[in-house]
Amino acid sequence: MSLPLDGLSAIVTGAGRGLGRAEALELARLGASVVVNDFGRPGRDGSGEASAAPADEVVTEIRAAGGHAVAHFGDVADHEQARSLVRLAVDTYGKLDILVNNAGILRDRMVFSMSEHEWDSVIRVHLKGHFNTTHFASVHWRERSKAAGGPVYGRIVNTSSEAFLAGSAGQPNYAAAKGGIVGLTTSTALALAKYGVTANVICPRARTRMTEDVFAGFGEPEAGELDPLAPEHVSPLVGYLASPAAARVNGQLLVVHGGMVAVVERPRVAAKFDTAKTVFSYEELDEVISPYYADRPANETFAAAEVLGLKHG
Image 1 (cartoon, helix red, strand yellow):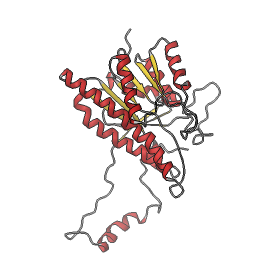
Image 2: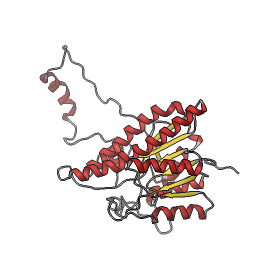
Image 3: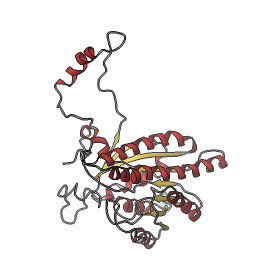
Image 4: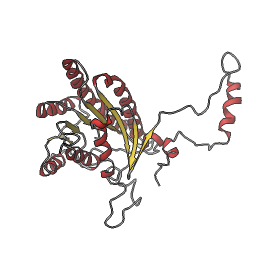
């Protein structure tokens, strides 16, 4: 009996722990040969000595279950190491078919307290890391498409966050990076569609090393039950988006957690004001816009997650 991803190869970044690990195991279960990438630093802020152990352990799990996997220990935020990651997949399996970007770190602080380094480091790992691997994978698919004279098989699944949707007061760097990943994904989806490649982005909610304090005491499972915030609730969606069944799903943002998937629409216009003259004056803007906000909370922000009923707690 054939599996959905038989004959396909995949890269999963940040796959040594948490969501990335669950995603790598799921892709392998569905038949893909997997390159397990993890830099291996133990701190969720990206601190500590790099280690091969997390990636190696996941490779061992996949092989023990009868799958195919190799490890890559590089930093995807480094352009050349991202190049080597894609090259490893192509050299090992003959081609790359699936790219799942998941690597990330946290350096939380309020915007008025955040240092330049704390900002740059999170943007570097999340946003630049997603770009680096996407760049080299897209070069590979474009070259293959030109050689084949038509579309090839390619799937990108990127990882954003509800911090981008609803805001996160102590994570301006993380929220900005995750918003940037959505923009990167939609741009990539348009650019690569003609080559047969799709690009989608997920906002997963899961209890991992990076979110252990956020979800402390929230939705704790009963004895013997699967945690509603377990990464295993997220990985099947990644497997689906990586599969031939999702050929028509492109440029989409999906929120996923605990047995629920929500497709998020692009922002829509909530109100529109037209000037009675050639151009708006300050006085006219005050007359038409101020009443619109008069009955709204003073600190109301764009919060798509609240509209979806997805806010934490």
